[in-house]
Image (spheres, one colour):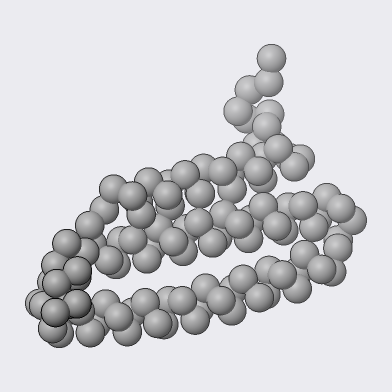
Length: 109
């Protein structure tokens, strides 16, 4: 029987477990929170989970350069997503004085 400490000690399984936990925390944050800021933080956690899994597979495949290139692209996309998302949050707060997503749907008017 494997224990959590033996899984986290090394190997691909430990990295995948950490990536899965990060992704589930991010998904739970996106689905359960109403604040746009917290939802963007959840999306960032999910992107970081994908990065952890991608780098783990690249490392255990023998230091594959393609995995590192994809990692850099994901980091660039996450930075762009964060800047656009922050701009939307600031615009919403200026217009509605709240970052609640229930009030954001009223912007269609």
